[in-house]
Image (spheres, rainbow, N blue to C red):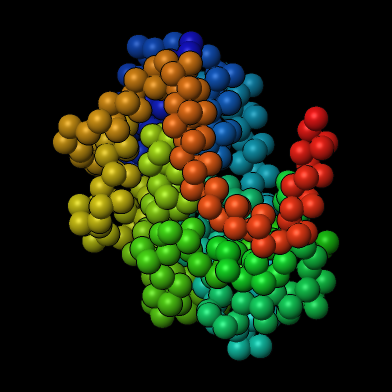
Length: 346
C-alpha cells in the first residue's frame, strides 16, 4: 500500500493523547496495513518508542502482530536506557559549566527529557545533546569540553570551516567524549542566519528555568520546536510533518494549556498547525493550499519525490548559494577542497 496518508493517519491517532483506544480500533478494523511500511515510516519519524507506549496505554497490542510489538518493545527498552545515560551526561555537563560560570540552557529533546515532560522518558528519541550557550561564552565552553576529553565529530562532506567560521554559524562543531553516550552541539543561535530574529539567543537565555538542568521557558521550548521543524528543517517547504516534532508539540500543549494561543498568534506556528490539521482534531486551518498539496503528495509517492527534489532541492540550493560563493572566493582552503571533491566525482 503506497498511500502514505493512511499510515500518517494511523500514527497520528496512536500518538494523539486526545484519542482513546476505541477510536483507533475503528481505524485498524476498516483499513489494512503493511506493517513493514508502518515500521519504515515510524522509524524515519523517530517515534517507534512513543508509538509502542501509546499502543500499550490504549490497550491495542492485540491488533498488532506479536513480532512487531516485540521489536518495538526492544527499541523502547534500549531507548529508555540510552536516555537515562543522556540525563546523567547532562548532569555532568551542567556541573562542569556551572563551575566555570558558563550560562547555558538545554534545547529540543534534551530539554524535553530534562524537564520530565513525558510519562516515560523512553518516548523521546534523540541523536545528540543540544546546548545553547550565552553570547561570549561559546568558545570558552567549547575549549572546556575539549580539555575534558571531548573531540570533534566531523560531519561527512566538505570539512573546510575554521573555528571562526563556526562562531558565526548556528552551532560549533559537534563534540563527543569516548566514555559518554551522546555527542554535544554547543549552539550560538537557534536558527539559520536569515531567521535568527524569530527566537533570539538572549531571550531564551534570559527566560531560562534554572535547576540542576537549565531549561527553556515552556513557550520558548514550544516556539523552538515549531520553528526548528518548519524553518530549520524546511517543513514549510517540504509540506510534510515530522511526528517526533509533532509529539513534542502535543506533549507540551497537554502540559501547558495556555500555550495553545501561540498557534493562532504566530504566523509560522499557524502554518505549522495547518499542516497538522488533517491528522489532529485540536488543530484548525481554513482552506490552505499547503494542506491540499501535502495530502495529494502523501497519496502519490512519485509526486512526493518530485516535490522533494525539485521544490525543496531548488529552495535549499538557492538559499546556500550566496554564502558558498562568498566562501569559495575568500577561502583558498575551501576552493582547494571543492576542487578535490569535484575531481573525485569525475
